[in-house]
Length: 338
Image 1 (cartoon, helix red, strand yellow):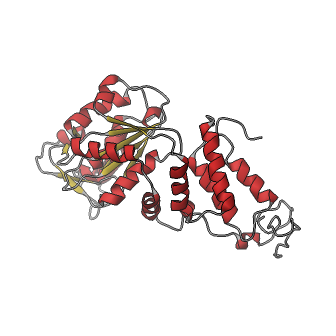
Image 2: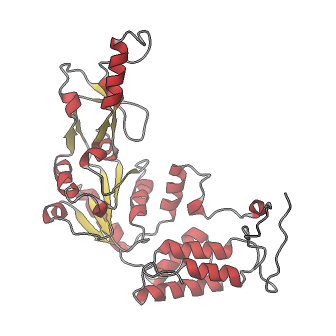
Image 3: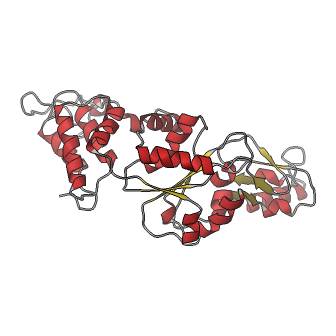
């Protein structure tokens, strides 16, 4: 395999050297010259390490700090709205990281999500298969007791957050406005009572506890009489992009926080937290990005971060091609790229 040759670029720039893929039609080892990823796209880190890194760089505003503390004191879920890319989801990680509450339990919502998805999953087919094998004389020496139904039950993120504990877990219910119209109302009783039941366990004749699997662990936990009840209410952060309205009964049981677009100074702090420094061109781009926000254009903060990471990543002074790519990255989200 041949080594890629530099293309000619403008004097003092890296117009040729920054290209890894060139569409030349022939193989080369240009991928070996690819620089390291930005911190928020470093997949050599574990999910926990990546989330910790994001949380440590998050810069909440005064409104966010005030409402998070209010939610902690009154033990109510926090419904967070705001433009895309303003850190709604990262807020949950920031809370968990700063307060030492462990890994965030994340429940991403889709149009098919139901309350049961968040509470637990029962593998009825798996249990039936196991029982049939034992009745057929197979696997007599090994394998779990067919009456041990707990091995076929795994709690969902919401169900795990409601397990008894000394300290609360942080639960992120992401983009709840994408869910079925009935989901918010279905959550009301769980939020009010801090508990739920597993009918498959309630029907058992035995009164002994059943060990089930939590959402984020292989260490089973005991459930008595099919009832899961929290001892401390979890820290629940629900995000919404305002794709639809919520019923008043649901809103009454939540504290509401709208994360607004940051000021130009706050935007600069966000960039510095992720990139460490800004050159003169970066300072100009931060101002231009905020000005476009102020004009009503739709942007996400990570567009700016991606553009600045591109400009600061490859070795050498950015040339016309790299600057053009950065411009395309920050194109308004509500318009087609030209």
